Image (tube, rainbow, N blue to C red; front, side, top):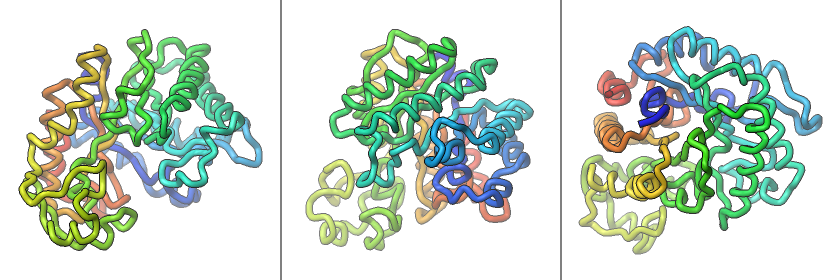
Amino acid sequence: MGIIFEKYRTGINLGGWISQSKYEKEHIAEFIKREDVERIASWGLDHIRLPFDYPVLENDSNPFHYLEEGFEVIDKTLAWCKEFSLNLILDMHRAPGYAFYNLDTNTFFTSENDQNRFVSLWQEFARRYKSEGGNLIFELLNEIVDAHGDTWNKIARKAIEGIREIDSERYILLGGSNYNSAESLEGVDLYDDERIIYNFHFYEPFIFTHQRAVWTPLKDVNIEQPYPGKIAGIDLLKKHFGSQRPEQGKSLTADTVFDKAYLENGIAPAVKFAVRTGKQLYCGEYGAIDNAATEHRVNYIRDINEILDKYGIGRACWTYKGKNFASIDEAGNPISKELVKALAKV
């Protein structure tokens, strides 16, 4: 199965800590602590995916000069992971000139300076962590959106070559150009390098995983979508979206059933890619919003994990704390013991 299924079989994201936040010192000091990493290990998970935004490590006013206080957070997280026998993925969630949630103002795909900063930052990681082994993986960029894919392929190649100049052994995660969708893997360049792992995210069906999410088209659609179950509120959905669902152009029909077979069909493009290419796969994000009933979130996570296990795909659930997808409450207790069991099932 390779390193992913051996060492990165079942993990969790630390979203909202040094990514998608205000980067304030108090927040960084308090949001995640040693006891959180200890708790994650106690759940039976084997790794953490750590999303980070580049401003934690580099100021736009002083590019190519790196902030030691930002690297200290990563060093500390890596040390905690070692202490509790966890592996770590470093995921660049926001790059110079790029954020997956701010597409209208991105300059990453047209700015050579942004791209050079991106490559240089990864080279800095390669230098600093060259002594680490399979306990540490680099994920180039989160949820890329490049209409044609060609530009992302060229930038990713530069970053991989830049890392390889310094560290020929580092495992690197590479995703497709449409929010890391399973379908977009077919457009990613293939490398004759067993240490390049191919990454996708999975949030289907969107109507369930993002129900009533305020940052999505579903914010005004007040339905409670179960899992498993048929599409709920079909008339209300059609009123807002016509005959098409608010994701991926799929048809709205009252007869559609969201169940394990539906999920496996959604993951099928990634599986087909792996079969065709012989490449290892990793699912860096999946999960369901806390607007969904806890029982249904548990059902969903359990089914996803069983499908990914079937195909030897490691994964990290979104997310440990906050960000509307939390696995713990404000007191640090699991939302549900059954949720933890579903996350850690091996």
